[in-house]
Length: 209
Image 1 (spheres, helix red, strand yellow):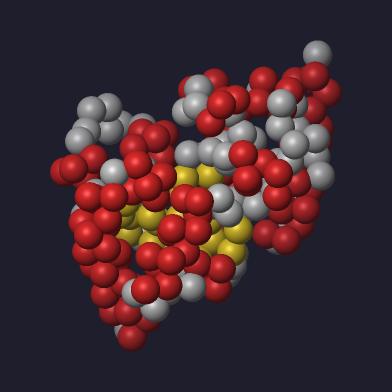
Image 2 (cartoon, rainbow, N blue to C red):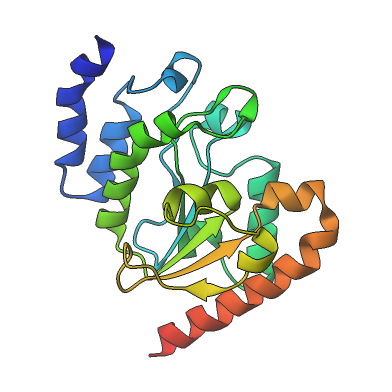
């Protein structure tokens, strides 16, 4: 019954005209479209600048994000900020960071398909309102759920390469290792740094033109 009760609220969220209205409406909505609502503390909408050219998409909030109501503020987010800062990129000023789902899965597990499906209208609204020029997909889970026709892939082959996709016209996409993966395997950090330099070079190029 809670799904039916939320339909009217969801329509109001999706009908808003500005990103600020969307963020406020979703954060305060008490969304109950999937079981993740049972254990969350906060709906985590984003972190950063909705007017930026760059949109970063992760998989789901973790414990720190759930506590603070902001995306990528835990150890992984701090590493992401540091790595980006090292290439002259301020994540809060120069990007908007969001997740495929807006509520923390129990024990930080990967989100289930039905949870992703429930949250997808909100993700699509974020894309429509922000109109990014570059989308960085942080990790394999984000790639899997954002590029649904890519059934099998190797992160070793996908990470660091720009590509186009018909679902995102006029947008360049790049897959990056999730910073949590770098925390688990620091040997991949130099590879990630090279990928970030490639991203920054392309961003500088489009800003010049």
